[in-house]
Image 1 (cartoon, rainbow, N blue to C red):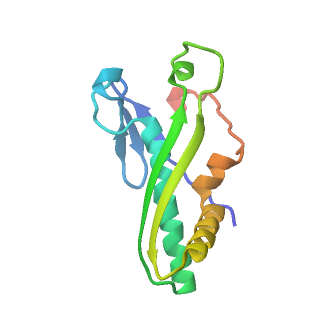
Image 2 (cartoon, rainbow, N blue to C red):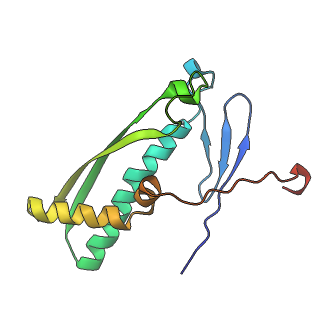
Image 3 (cartoon, rainbow, N blue to C red):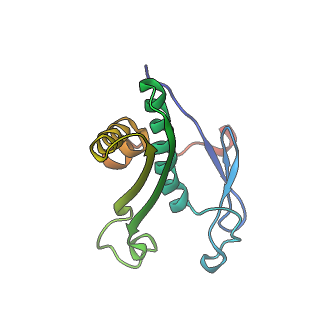
Length: 147
């Protein structure tokens, strides 16, 4: 069963971007980067989707298996070459070169069970899948009068 999820964005002043979705929010850049610091930057938003998904999928699996899951805490960090995204070099790539997750699981499981549980979470997490695999990306210019 394929579902389509839609969000939209509208550029505001400076680096402010207004995101339209079930819970609208603002993405911006820090003042040092020319923004007004009105919200997280796009890289933080991208990275934050992973721990949120790990927690959600972890909860789904726990409910399905009737595991008493007391807590999941996730810290994520990613390495990125900002010189590339700023156009200062053509060497490398624009995206994160490595993303690391550090996951604490509070449940009555031994280490092997926690590792297997985390592996299943990673397999079922759409955000992890999109970070690890290639999705078809299509961008098309549309007439603003019709948007």
